[in-house]
Amino acid sequence: MNDTICAIATSQGVGAIAIIRVSGEDSINIVNKLFKGKNLNKVESHTINYGYIIDKNQKIIDEVLVSVMHAPKTFTTENTVEINTHGGIASTNKVLELLLTNGCRLAEPGEFTKRAFLNGRIDLLEAEAVMDMINAKTNTQRELATNQITGKVSNLINDLRDEMIQIISNINVNIDYPEYDDVDIITNDILIPKINNIKEKISKIIKESRNGKIIKDGIKTSIIGRPNVGKSSLLNQLLEEEKAIVTDIAGTTRDIVEGQISLNGIILNIIDTAGIRETEDIIESIGVEKSLKMMEESDLILFVLNNNEPLSDDIKELLSKLKDKNYVVIINKTDLPRKFKLSELPVDKDKIINMSIKNNQGIEELKNKIIQIFNISQIEMSDPTYLSNSRSISILESCLESIKEVEKGLGNNFPIDMIELDLKNIWEKLGTINGTTYEEELLDQMFSRFCLGK
Image (cartoon, rainbow, N blue to C red; front, side):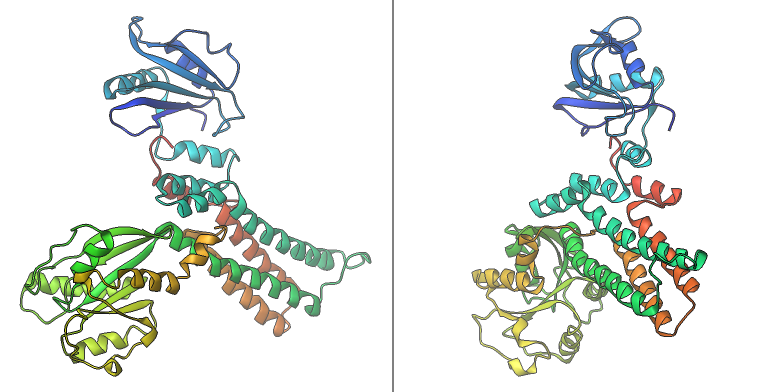
């Protein structure tokens, strides 16, 4: 953390400008050695300065604008310089090379953001949101990341921890200073409602954070069915492009074909799978196995049936497994005579859509049904202040289970000092969500997923 780091902060390639970021105590001195223009050590903070980057032979490398920002009012809270060069690959790399030979070290992925966290500029939730903002593909994803960057999500966790520390402190005073008359005596009758209130708040955050995960990661959607029922045609209609090959030959799709659409600001990650049937073709059989696996792993299953084909026993069996999942059963080819009865389908009749994919009939009805199943309209209208990553949600779920154990302990009249220890463990575990407490290994793993210049 005492050295000075640098990296190209813009995408590699040809562009109008490129930005090279430098951060560390010696950043202004190092850039000043290479800069022909004003003395950067004497300019005011947060100013942009025109000049040239030159090499040791005073040869001009590029015409630049240099932004100088003094600590602590910077992203990393360290002295920071940003060099705006022309966006050519050769000139950008040459400037970076000069920085490295004059005392800078090439930054690791996410190291600027990591320094911002370690220096107390942002917490761990806000740091994670930086990458979410970069990866945002919809306005809803952008709003979710914005709320996390600005600390709204962190406040949810901080409020929980504040509530818990008040209870823990009160218990500590009762145990260590029983002679104090002006402090409430914590009894089970007082503690049980307080613990229940915390449990309800955690449960609410977890429930609402499922929306956050949907906003961030999208809905993993698998199109399942027998060969030639119209799965690939459905994918093409949803994507509004010829993504998958469509023929009358059974087994055309042998591996998964993927695409994405935005549905009211929520990404649907759609996967067209191989038709499910018994086959001696080794490649096709592998595809069938993948289809069955995708059916287990998906957030949403679009199960396509052929209106003009009798229901086989294996399809009925697969349909019966849908009851605990989010699904829509699509009866395709409704322009042809029906060869089975609706009563034969072991599914919720409210989740059946009649379609003629070839004639583009039923697509909007299908989209509306998906919106209804995931309550997407409500997600779109609400202020997205949720936890949105699996790490945070899993920690909170663990805290919820621990709170439930505390409730049981209170019901069984466990000693108050044991209850206090359990509450403190939960309080510390909540701190790992926003980085109040953390392990170095976790930070290394998390920030390694960031961009090099971020």
